Image (cartoon, rainbow, N blue to C red; front, side, top):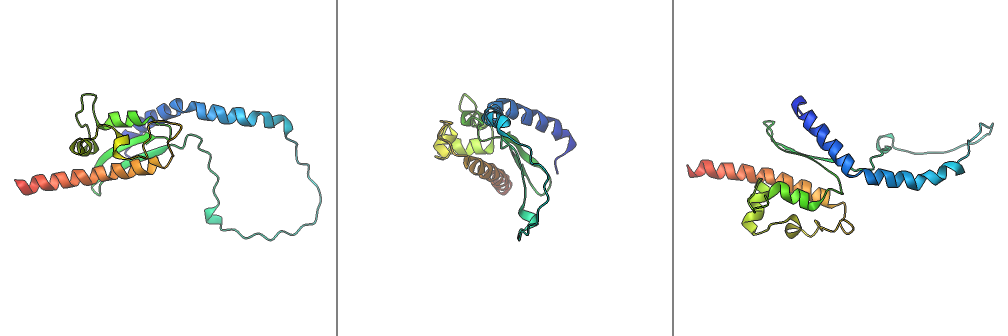
Length: 167
């Protein structure tokens, strides 16, 4: 469960992402605007019709999220939160890299520590799915990033366990 104190941060992050990706919604609106003059009202009519329909009501959903907002949250079983990020497919990869590696090359997160250990300074070096060219990047990078953030939690656990064993 997301704690009430985190909601303000989450709202700011979502608003920031929407502001950054506003162009997507504007493009969609521009695309459908010409259709407005071509629409006609469907008038009620009397008709006899039989329609056989089979459907699974549980899988019928209609969602409209032009921004494709993803919440990345990593929490352990003791409710310790290690990560809370809001991203979209258009979040700049270099911005995400900066969350993990500082400009002077120092790691900021466990994922950054792993990257430093591997001699990697940018996310595109870690996986080809993080293509820095926004035109070439596939939205599947969101799932890869989510998994990496979960690995980050595993690294924290491993690091703590190793420290305890060496004492």
